[in-house]
Image (tube, rainbow, N blue to C red):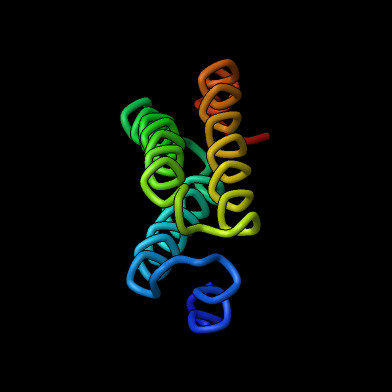
Length: 106
């Protein structure tokens, strides 16, 4: 997303500043979730932070979609709503399987 800002801004009907915000948030999420994935053990606090962040980001994506509904293109709206559905589902699955996610790796 960060490499294709101008093209995506035109495709999505959204300003580049907003796409930078989304891209940076995705990079931070990817870094944090990868750091948890490679750990042999995870603390409940670290996992709960990921779950809450995913839930909040899902709401942020829906909020952005609502705010930009008048100007965003179909592609822009689809991106935001699919991302909201995806990370909201991740949060739900992470909560459901938190016991196994906290268990030491085998």
